[in-house]
Image (cartoon, rainbow, N blue to C red; front, side):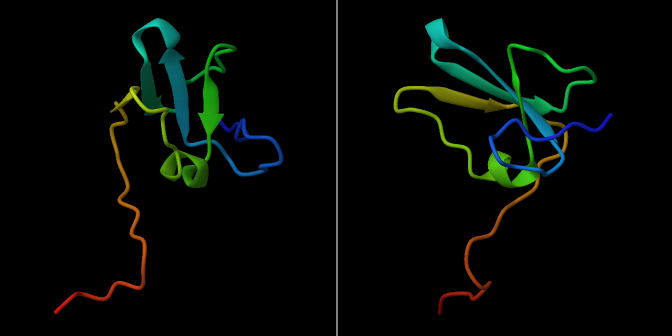
Length: 78
């Protein structure tokens, strides 16, 4: 099961699937579906990490394994 990221111009392998329900202003992130769903988007790790939802929407991350993304050089304050 290897599919490419749905974002235009991205050639990375997809690692998660994004789906949403417009009427409830709700977005779900799931582990990559076994089969492609024409109503969902497959995203690579980079695009998943940069994902933001519109104001008033809620994001539910339902993936089984989550990676922490650190911005910065790893310096501690103090």
